[in-house]
Amino acid sequence: MSDWSHLQEFRAVRLNAKLSPMSQYERDLFEQHCLHPLETEANSPATIIPRVADCDAIFVVSTALPESVIESLSRCRVISRLGTGTDKIDVAAATRKGILVTNIPTFCVEEQADHTMALLLALLRKLPQMSKAMAAGAWSSGRSQASTNIRLAGRVLGLIGFGNSARAVAQRARGFGLRVVATRRNMDAPGSVADELGVEMMALEEVIEQSDYLSLHLPLTTETYHLLDEATMRRMKPGAYLVNTSRGAIVDEMALVELLREGHLAGAGVDTFEAIDVFVEEERPPDHPLLSLDNVILTPHVGAISVQAMEDVSDGGIANAAAVLSGYWPPPENLVNPGVEPKFPLEERNV
Image (cartoon, rainbow, N blue to C red):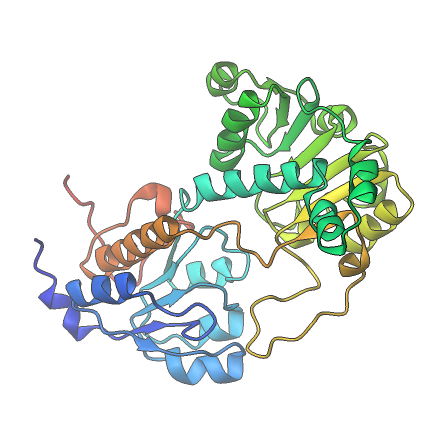
């Protein structure tokens, strides 16, 4: 076992102590690395800054770290995102301060793919409606609704984005007899993986127009914000379904509501939202029109969650920070800002 005793001198902060509390696995892993982070729940710059200003490492799940927080960090070496997306972290500000931002790009790939397929299947087989019909004793009504179900095999599943989670969805979709088409930002990238999976790569416009079911697998950036606006979604097939397990703001939610209400889209499965914040200390029913629609399945951003995924993210997130605090670069695939000039020199680790 590695000797991590040198890490005792560093001060770490683990945010989201209440909204995403440490598991015993994570707690034991910190102990093994001789790190004893301050566990805190702080979700505004005014409450975050006093807790992190003099820390060496920050571990964060869902709290936003804007420029004002980054600028307050006097000695921080690394911000370890316990997850994948870093759209809530001002990465540019961290880079200017010489702070490494790390993540776990392979986190929850299997879980997100499972959740995508679960939402799609539940929508197509009308499982929520069938459950309600059974509870109400309205069995004939349930059978009547089910009579309009469409066979899955032979239909077209479109993937916007073709990273790890999309590829995992494609693997699953083949077992259901779906034809899978996909698009990605760099269409000149080698197509061997797509060929192996039997996925047809095509332009974004073609994927949108050809798909019976459309699933999102891309990060939230300035380029992808409201990528699916009203005009774009109107180009989807009448009766198509949308599944979003990526980031809520990729979709214009109000436009989605309108297209669902008027019947242009047959349904949607949504695990992540722009206007509903599921990471709040005071929970209450949200006032959002998506919740009033019968052809929508909503889940509270749980597509990433499993026992194994939580262990994976603890392993990777703590390892990333431990490497930096020990004077080494983290694995290059885990470094969000590869152009950063660290405020403390780092060496390449010889493996």
